[in-house]
Length: 362
Figure 1 (cartoon, rainbow, N blue to C red):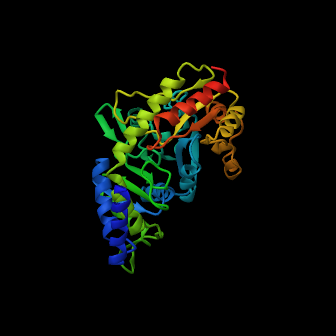
Figure 2 (cartoon, one colour):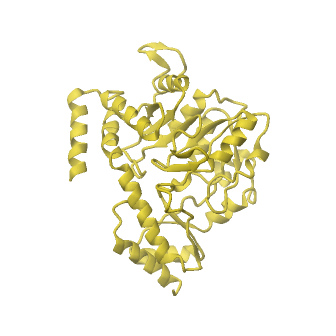
Figure 3 (tube, one colour):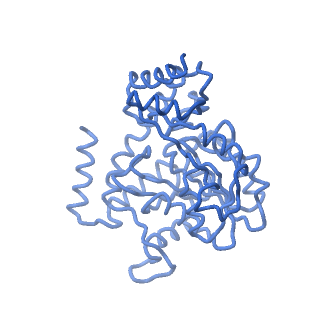
């Protein structure tokens, strides 16, 4: 009830002020989220996809350029690169983390490469120290795709730092199902660069610095004031919600770690919020049968993602084929997302795990 009252109050404030576009609540949330991520600047935009696109545009990525990202991600990562006119160049994923395999990045760099977009997939930060070293060697920008990792800490060479300030820029999504979700679409760009910040602010609002004075060819991509009001309330709860997700993940692991037919995600519970479990993804033998069995018991599951991006019809023009990214392709046939949300109860986790054990006769 507490959060409902706070959200209602935030929304009614916007309704009273009638500042629905780039209003007071947007300014407030941008400041709060920048402080939360440990960065100087935040720009609220219309979606996570737009956050990625405007980040790349602000860095000057254009037609003829190449941007490296991973094969296993939601298609929005590739679409944002395509929107700039640049070509997505894909690399395979690490067998343990499901994030970008840092050992294969350098081989994908060409004279046209301008940026790397590491994805903090499922809520686990990518190996940013290694990625930053590669980017520095080749003079490349880094745009974090942090759309699934709000609040996660990366434990790197300079100590724990939240995602959002680990590269030149970072993109977040506030789609309702995210760890920090709005009541509709929304997104944000974070950066420590004042120059990039000003550029994204203009790009999201028709390229104008002052109303009707258009400096850039911009877009209409603004975070609604009502969504910002909702996000400001929910941001206060985010760390607690993430801690609950991590506790649920630990319980799943305890119930399932002796089932050889499934592979659990790797995580270290001693490092606080080093994985914020937007999704709890296992790999399962006989996945189709397991899904049907769980469904019969009233347990919903998901697959993130069933068709690798390089095999999607929309991106066949990139020229990749089956076999181009063997780890991504193998995992696409095995991955299964189990129920994961802060309000999960111990008994529910036990029931899900029990059903999985039952399917395998354990």
